[in-house]
Image (cartoon, rainbow, N blue to C red; front, side, top):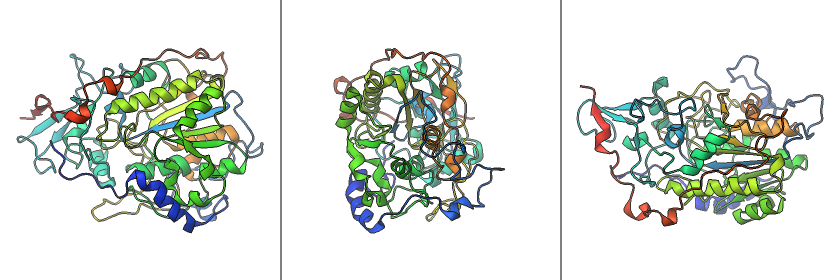
Length: 470
């Protein structure tokens, strides 16, 4: 398959910072505080939900440390892959594909006539298949609001191939391609029910990661939105809790453009080299948000995913080698499914606020009352439970909830107020199991591999994985 119509790319991530600086100057500074509208929202469908602004520990002052065993939290977010597409071949019981007697996934999707990418014959069925090379197609699969809802198929999870994502959606990688992330997920806790926050693209999901809401955004566009209760960075600043956004080529914080005009924000956006030097020196801040190179090592198409595996290994190994390791918790995840197949239907979610999705022409109706697709995620810490499989439901606001739980900060929206805080993956009552960091598998160095960026992703889909229902 060749991509002749790439996914909408409304604004290059490389231009986010420059664009954001211009818009941020217009937004002005707004003090963080609870907005009356978010505190009285009637759109939430959860019975007796926890409220934004209510402290995790009402008997302690906001900003008070409640988790003394953990001093440093690090979050690293990759891009555009579902759990199955990255970790589907983990051993049984760790959330991946259903495997047949031959060890191959039996998961499949119909490929009906009338699909945007025509099938090779009537009654075609496409089975999950290993990607031919570490590289991906340009612009596919498709991860818009519309494609996501077609793929979800009212919970049947059988619309990925017939959606705009097309047949590449059934591709996956295994430990021979991504040895580091497989080793990570088999050693430290892996979260098998960690869902993206919204069935949409990168910017909306990263907004949830930082503010607990996308404020209606469902596409990769920039605007002047200001979340009523601010972002986690403003909450940390309000209580003199240190943080940095370490970025490789573009700081993802800049998708909230108004932040670029606020004091104490831009000075905390620093290059990725500083992350590695801070880790080595033992001077990482209380909270670190770490960004890959969005054009090379984030794992978005058409990148070679081995650059992402290499980057993730560099970040995790730097943290484990740091003098701060004995009291550190690292969360690794991906920002959305990217249009790749996953077999687990996203469950209902708490709506973050009263703001509905900003729909475009052809977008199906909906709301923010359901998570997006599962994403590969896990926990790295000396206190982590060895080999643990977390089945608790998480999304990106679970990272907010973790931060809020530790420093007793008020939740920003209904979504993070009602999120799980990820602490099921830790054992804080016993001596830390990983005080001496384990040796994890080395990633494959893409520079010494076969150079798929010049040869392309190979034949997608492999013809042998297309069968028929007849």
